[in-house]
Length: 572
Image (cartoon, rainbow, N blue to C red):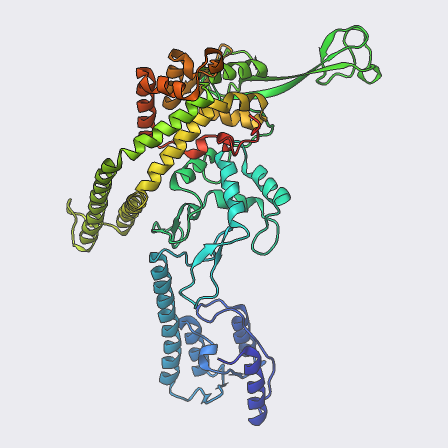
C-alpha cells in the first residue's frame, strides 16, 4: 500500500490532470473499520454545507470499511449530496449503479472481519503454545529477531535477576512494595523498558502478575489460562505466598514505621495484630528526674528547658502492644519492652541450638538415607504418571461433555462453566507434569531444605544476637508459626522439624551447643558413633525426614543467610 504522503501527491496530480479544484486535504489516522472517525464526520458535514461537491481518494476502501460509514457514502451519493467520488482508477456518480459500490464496501468490511478472525486465531494458537501474545513484563523481553508470529519471550539479561531479587525481598515478608521499589531504583538502578523510572503502580502489577510463576490469562479477564513456555521466575507456591502477604490483590499492608516484629505477632487475648511504638525519656542534667520527651520542651520538675541542658541523658525504648482493633473487645494486655521479647526469642533459639559437629553428621545422615530410597522413587514416579493420566482423561471427558447436547443433569454446559473447569484441570495437569519431570529435583530440594534447617539450628542464635532488625524478624518467622503475645510472654509454635531437634538437644547432651567435646576428650568419630547409636537421635532424624517430605518447606521460609557460606557472619 502507498504511504499517506504518496497517496496525497498522486491524488494532487490526478486533480490537476482532471481540472478538479481541491478545497481541503484531509488525513485520518484512525482505522476505517469502525464508525465514529472525527475527520471523516467533519468531511461529510463540509460537503453537506456545500463547501465541496465531491471526494478524491486513493481507493474506495480508504473512505470506509464498516457498513455504517459505507452506507452513509452510498446514500449521500444517491441523493446528490456527493456529486462525484474520484479514485485513482475510476469515478463514481449519483446516476451510476450502486451495486458495484456496495460490493466494494462489503469486500472491504469482510476483509476487516477475516483479518480480525485470522489475527485472533493466530494469537490464540501462540498462547496455546505457551507464549504470551502481548508485550513481555519487566524482567523479560520479546525476541524480535524471529519472524512475526513465532517470536518467543526470553529473559532480559539486564533485568531478570534484579526483578527476581525484588520477588525475594517481597517473599521475606519484611518489605512493602514501595520500599522494594525504592531499593530497586535507587540502589540497583533498575529502569523500565523505556529507560525511565518504574512507577508505583508498576510494582503492584509485577507482584500480582501470575506470568512470573509460569501462567498467563489470555485474553485477560476471560478465564482462559495457559501454562507458559517461558522460564518462570518463581514457583506457584511463592506467587500464592506473595498474594497472601499483599492481603488482597494490589493492596499491600502498609507500614509507617520499621520495627522488627510488627505484622507477624498477634495478641493472645483478642487476636488483633501487635504493633510497636518508640518512646524517649530524658534524664535532666540538673535535677536528675526522668520525663518523656514527647511534646515537652522543658523538665517538669525544675523547668529547665531541654535546649539549655548540658549533655542530658536520652533513653530510647521500643514497646510492643496490641492494636486493640477487634470490635466488641476490651483487651487488657499491657505493653512489652522490645528487649523482653528479644530475650524470649533467644530462649527459643537456645532450645534448638546444636553443635557444628552434630549439624554435619545430620546432613550426612540425610544424604545417606536419600541414596537408599532409589527404589521408592520409581514407585512415586508411577503414582505421579497415573495422576497425570487421570487428569488428561478428565480433560477429554470435559470436552466430550461440552460438545454433547446435554450434560449429566440434563442442562447445557455453559461456556463460563466449561472455561472454569478446563482452567482448573489444565492447572492440575501442568502442576503434575512439573512434579513428574522434577521428582529428583524435589528430592534434592528437601535435602537442601534439611541442610538449611540444621544450619539454622546451629547458627540462628548467633545471627539473632548480631543481626539487624530485619534479620531478627526473619529468624522469628523461620522458627515457627502462630506467634502469640499474651501476658508479656511470647508463645511460638515451633516447626515440627525444630521440635524434633529440640527433643534431641534436650535429651542428648553430646548434640547441644553448650556441650564442649574437648573437655571430655571426644573426637569427631566418637561423636558420630554416639549420634548413630542413639535411639533418640535416630527417631528424631526420621521425624525430620518425614516432615521434609510431607511439608516440602519453602526455602524462602528460612533466612537468606541460612547457609554459613551465604551468611554475613562467616567469621563464626
